[in-house]
Amino acid sequence: MDDFHYQNDELCCERVPVAKIAQKVGTPFYLYSYNTLRRHFRVFDEAFRTVPHITCFALKANSNISVLRTFIREGGGVDIVSGGELYRALKAGADPQKIVYSGVGKRIDEIEFALSSNILLFNVESAQELETIDAVATRMKKKAGIALRVNPDVDPQTHPHISTGLKENKFGVDMKKAREKYGRAKRLRSVDIKGISCHIGSQVTKITPFVDALGRLKKLIALLRKDGISIRYVDLGGGLGITYKNEVPPHPVEYAEAVIKSAEELDCTFIFEPGRVIVGNAGILMTKVLYTKSSADKNFIIVDAGMNDLIRPSLYNSYHRIQPVMGNGRKEINADIVGPICESGDYLAKGRTVPAFERGELMAVMSAGAYGFTMSSNYNSRPRVPEVLVNGGRFYVIRRREDYRDLTRGENIPSFLKVRR
Image (cartoon, rainbow, N blue to C red; front, side, top):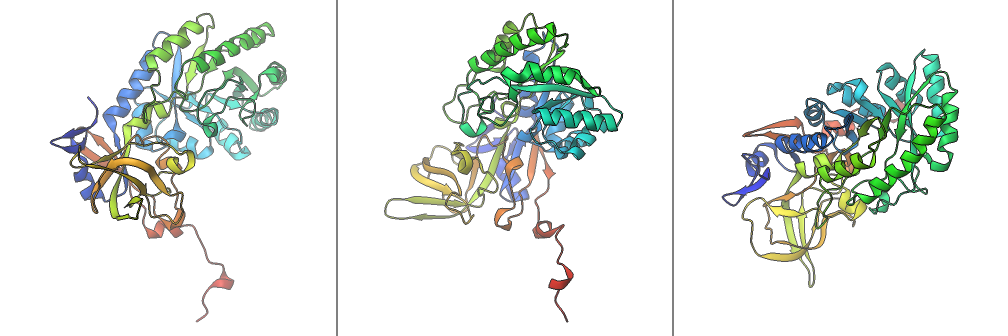
């Protein structure tokens, strides 16, 4: 059963009417289904039950610690890309030995934090980063677990802004130079080579790019083992897509079958970093219609959520399905759904056939559980919205709405600017 469904013509999340939550919390807000989160994680994780693996949720997709705790309780690990994400992961109760640290720009203080936290490994993205990790680990009298993130030059056939595995992308080391880089790592005294990593992109809707990338990794792994370098972990990243509109991405079971078949002889522990596929369709953005207006050839529906709340449509021209909270199946019109931000690029849908919303009505922006709140901002000095989690017949505010005081918290006026009385 879909955990976002209509009951008596009213949108519900699990067993809670969404309008009831809006009445208590106000709009806009993000709303997540606990049962969907847990079910999606289990489906992905259990698809690989026949091979040693760690499912490390990509925290950047949704960083709320209650969401993280949901996956950690299921035995999951966490994929992080900053010191702040490491802090969140530990705050949520993650096992440090199930934390992998990716990202091209790790600062020294972040490396120190990760080493002192005893994480499983760093996915290293450059020769200079490798040397820096070794130097920091030597100073701290630690051994740093590492995998080199290799760029396999595989086209994931996704949006160019979320493609990460082509040679023109900033991520990873060149496949042709990887063997040499591993040789350098082997000579460093404070580095423990644990594995190899790659990540080709996000919102990938075909299996072939994953299998192609794994095929290239297998050849490299064979050469590294000849060099006496033990590869115990293979991190295949994340990137499996979801349905926003008409996409037909592979089911996690299909993905798992293809990976397992292709890697039968590898004898290693796999690390996977799913994000969007777990949380994307487990969350929605709730908003309210403030005004409607029409010109000679254009209809506008102005809502109280803007690009600062959900930037994906403006940034990627991404599609999110729009649904009314009450009265599904009504008359439709062609309209732009726009927010209150002072930017022409502030829209949630453009030139879209949508229900004919009226002022004061509630609107659900679907498939907003991934890269929604995590990419939100205070642009136009707008407080960030709350996050709400539903479990069965109850809902919980898992992040409160910011208020105006939060907007200036941390700011100070220097003495020369203070008002003289």
